[in-house]
Length: 273
Image (cartoon, rainbow, N blue to C red; front, side, top):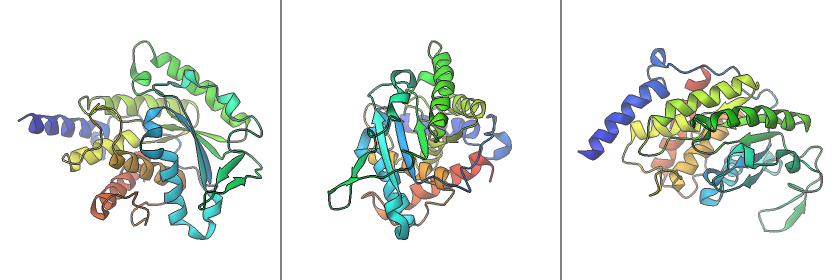
């Protein structure tokens, strides 16, 4: 009975949050819908434990990018700067772009240290606030303040700001629409792309509620949740479909293909394509 009630609540939330059908989508529409034609090759992920679970979302995004473009795989890289439980106001984004520091070296496929010769550190900065901050009564103004401040810092260093729309807690599906609205408004206010990961979670749960995307705390992602988020990031940043990508993150193929498809459908719906 509890599972049925949960599925009904999620299905109700999905109509508002994901837009199925699109005519019922009550969300603000994103202004920025692509990073092309100059799609990015390198990212810095600035956030919290939602990013660093399951060996880090950045590593999965890079492996998806390299699998999609093996001839240029050496061009793709990602770095994470994360603080558990953090909001944007915890991060000193200016310091992340200081020269000869973050991103100055990395490891190749054989675990050798490679010193990077870079014209600029990163093409984009993917930023996420704490899981409740954008919609919390006492913190949502802080979110808006630092979204603006950090976007300006990122641009001053030749990169493009991108916001990562996080997902609802497993027992609070109403957060999906609230977070989607908050992130979309922030993206529009700062001329920044928004990655609709939260909408992808809601869509996947509505379609396949038996698939677990959250761990026991109802907040953090399972490997399937991280992979879904990574596929959504890949689709948003590259403009390419993750469907059929050979990198499956150790997930069984039918589940991985389902998550790839959900990510692509969500990105296309959110950007109105």
